Every structure is written in structure tokens, then in C-alpha cells.
Image 1 (tube, rainbow, N blue to C red):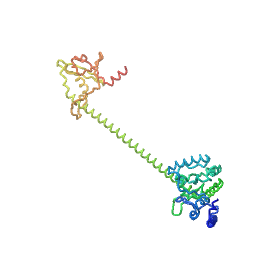
Image 2 (image 1 turned 45 degrees about the horizontal axis):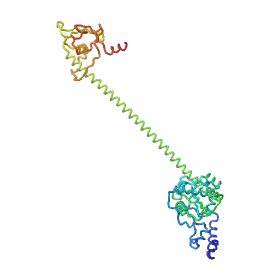
Image 3 (image 1 turned 180 degrees about the horizontal axis):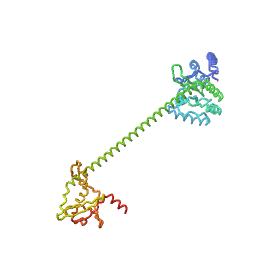
Image 4 (image 1 turned 120 degrees about the horizontal axis):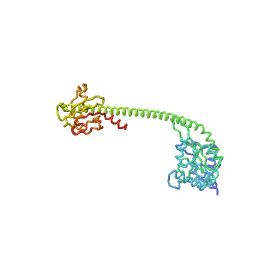
Length: 418
């Protein structure tokens, strides 16, 4: 018994009138578009659902009862991977390049990339599924067409939660189902673009039919997509220009900051060097001042030269570094240090300018005076360096001697020459 034999004469008349009206209204043209807000289709008329038995509805529409998915909800990516695995196990590995994410991800990617999205849904319950997958979807011309025109393809099984939800959203009636979704131009009063269901193929179809319907939509939508792509390129170029300008500004800002940093470091280094030089100069001047004051103290506290008639004295003759000769008497009980002090302070006696300096004689406790000369007894050449000795205990000085005053730097040069 076929499905029509189950109908009454009244039901047959109603069905004949409905099919005639549908053919007159749509003919071979695609169904009306649906936006991404609903992405729906016509569905089965309510009066058919009401008047005709379930077995008949399935017979004339190929419609599943679709009471719900056979599996609980899972991660869309995992579901997509399972769909691909089950597909290849059942129908082979020659098929469109199915998107590996969920439907929403595919929809967003197609929108962002300005691509057509082809949605494929099937049910394992329908006999047409096997042939459609093995022949239509494995057709080399169709696969090449999809690749050449850069279609994004998403597939789902209505037994899965997501496939069932997509089927409900798109109001699928028969399987296998192919929906073509494209990006629409903004409507009046709105700048937002929407993903629109522009065509649908329900039930068995050949690869040639699928290519023909896809070509129709590419032709119809290409102008709009080209405008959207041009607008996007303009926005991207404007964004790149702004980014380049911002990068140039930031680079200039960094260069200015680096220049300011280097200038600051240079100023700080110069100021530090200046402070260091000033400190060294101040220490040098302070050291010179201490030395002058200490020398004046030594000069003022050096015992007077004993009289020529006084016994127990040494008569010392000095040849200075400038060739001048000086003679002075010292008591034998004086330390050799006094001889050094006499030579060191000789300028206070002979240089009136220094004698007139407004210096206060000052003994600096802890100050160790360094003499820049050494006394030499020439025959044999002997350095007189023990300044703590008494003069009478120093053979090179007692009871009389002719000494050469050598600057230490001259002495160092002689050592180097040797």
C-alpha cells in the first residue's frame, strides 16, 4: 500500500490543490531568503501536519519526526570532529572540506571572511543520504567548484544536538539539505550586515544541480560581496594608515624620549664630572692650604741658628735644586728633621711674597708632611733619610758636610736611566 492509498478522497483533493498552488507560486525558483536572525525556511504547512497521518507526511516530504537529538549536547568542535569521522567511515574520504568548528563559528568566519557558507545537513534515517554523500558530495566537479570559489562548508547530522538546532533554525523539511548563506548589504537605517539564507536545496539532487544553484547565488551576490570587500579593503587601508601614523608617532615619541634621556644623562654626567673636578680642586687647595700653614708653623718653630762661636754645632753647606748654595749651622742635638725643615721652609726666608701671606701658622694633628726632596752626601753618595736621628749621630752630617738637595722626581728619573 502506498502513501496515497491511506488518504480519503477529501484529503487527496486538498493535497492536489496545495501542490498546484506551490508549483504556481515558486516553480523552480529558490525559496525566499532568511536573515541570520532566523535563517529559516518554509517548513511543512500546518494543515498538512494537522490533516494527514505521520506515515504520509514522511512519505511525501521525506521529513523525519525530529523529536530531538539522540546524543546530549557536547563541545561543537568535538561534534564536528565526530561528524567528519562518522562521515568518512560511512561514505568515504572524498568529500567537501568541512569546517572543523561549530555552526556559529562557521557562520562568524564566513561573515568575517566575506565568504559564502554552505550548510549541509543529513539524517542517517533517510535512504537518500548514502547515495547523496557517495555520489553528489564526492563529485570532482562539485569539489573543484567549491574550492575554486572559496566556499566555506559546514556539515552536521540532525541526530546531534547542534545539527538538530541548526535544522530547527533553518526549518529544514527534507534531507539531504543544502543551505546557501551569504552576507547581505546593510539595510536602510542600519550599518550592520547580516548573514542571509539565500537558497536551499532539500532532498536528493545531483552535483550538476548543486553547482547550478550555487552559480546562481554567486552571480546574484557577487556584486554585493565585491562592494563589501571593497569597503572592507578601504577600512583596512584606513586602519593601516592610522596604524602607520600611530607607529610613526610612537617611534618619534620614543626617539624624543631617548634623545631627552641621553641629554639628561649627558647633563648629569657633566654635572657629576664638574662636581668631581670641583671636589678634587677643593681638596687640592685644602691640602695646599694645610701644607702652607703647616710649613709656616714649622718655620716659626724652627730653632734659631746657633752662633758661630757656639760649640757642639755642625756646619752644613747645601746646593739647592736651582744651583744656589746655602750654608747654615745646626746644633748637634737637633734631629735631622730640622735640616729638612730648614730646606723646606727656605722660601719663607728668601721669598718675601710668601712671607707676607696672611696665613695662620697651624700644626695639623695627624698631618704627615711629605718632603719632595732628599738630602744627598755626594762622596760617597749617601742618602740622608733617617730624620729622627740626631745630627751628631749622622756621619754624613757631622761635624760638617756639603749636601746636594735633589728633588725626588729627579731622583726617580736617575733610577729609570739606570
